[in-house]
Image 1 (cartoon, rainbow, N blue to C red):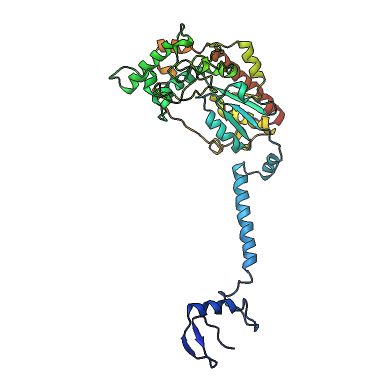
Image 2: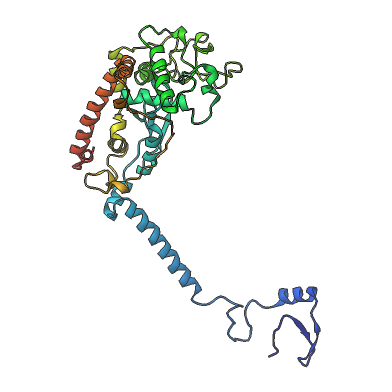
Length: 374
């Protein structure tokens, strides 16, 4: 048969006469048969290989197997256990996020345990859900207070709401950063001492007086007083241009209808209505208990004896300058910290006991342990 070439036209004898134009080349390509019509074999470039489809299927199966293997490996390497985990229903979690407790790390880690979670820095009354697993995590109040101060002192995000114009104490002129931090801390704690009143203000940043306890009881708004500058809700701007009030975060400040030292019985009722009460110092156990309450089981890396490095942490660090821990500050400063955390310390103690009790109950029901490392 006559040769089929694409780059020259041929006369009836098969001799080349002249180069094909672009138009002629396009017409020839349109008219060329998809496969040879004379039974001859197609060249590799003109038709797909007979083994290409089986190869494609094989590669797809291999890729799926590799993906499944990676998933199974991340969940402990036991395919039976992975299938058992996947078979469990998931109850959504509503998380009450108290600032400066490590809540972002917990909230970003829990989804990697297969649990859907939402979380906000809002009072109990706004985040508690009837058909959800309600969770909260508290931090040692002594370290929590220092973390609050450090965040306001350093203003790591450059927020106008933490502008020096609001008067936040940062030490004395000429202080080194460490000395400025220490002097500022003492001034800040003295400001919120025994004689503090709401009218004294809070520098448009965290009010440390039993903040963790107040998250359980805050939110009884006063439409006028809770929008006042300096004493009402936190503002996003500066004193000259304060902007709107961020008043859904009423535990950052002390609302007109909120108590600086909430009633203990009311706090216990609120805590008892939550399915998970954890602590920052045992964050892994808290995360695993959340998973158990949501799914009825736990991730293999929750179990005692598992490789800690394989636990799916998703750390979220909001860095702030803090040169000293509670144990390193002066005795006078420690007394000032204790003065503003009287109720918070009771709440944290309750949270520790509650986490231990609920974890032991979960372990007994599952026949698995996940608290030994804590």
